[in-house]
Image (cartoon, rainbow, N blue to C red; front, top):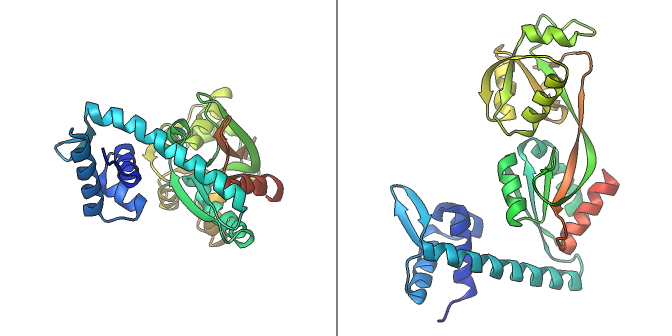
Length: 294
């Protein structure tokens, strides 16, 4: 069999994403080029690797087996790249990092500072939700993850590098805006807009109020910080957000922070990777940068 590394790399991306379109974007290829590489691999192996049911792509039994081998190949290549980058120093190399959507309000500025120090390093940044971050850690497909609460279900190394206070936000004309210290129980009379189940902010919110015997009325479940901010500004309820996400709205006086007793909820941002993972030189440098310079 004349299988090429390129075919295996393309197949691994399609199999992991279960999408030719996402694989093409990830590999900076056209979708026809991705399809051609997969067809060539299937001809070499003599078996179909994917089947299409409706609009969705699924792995065949053979495809699932080949995917395990393709992951091993990809990891071996990553290890070789890491070793060579270490030998060459930080004049080159690649940093693969995924961050929680809330962290994207400050991470680009950190990456910009890091890039000025190490201009030869190529950065691959993925901004996604908590569930995907945990999946990426489990599959070992990224070097580092920045998130608000490390997963207890995985064997990871996690170190806090920055505070992440959660605050209650309201529109400027809200009746509680003038209160110097709003009692916690008073919030039971308000409606809150909340993130989707599984969100780190939602988990922290529910734990905090449950421990204090406070039952909140929840309105809409909203899938992003931006949507919560817009909904709060429209008067649909109060929100609980990371302080880092509302700098612009505070400056423009579109939102205010309510002075609620026992607030803010003080959390931290963590830099996380699989325990025992050999970090590439670029990832090791970025981790050191976060822990010493932020």
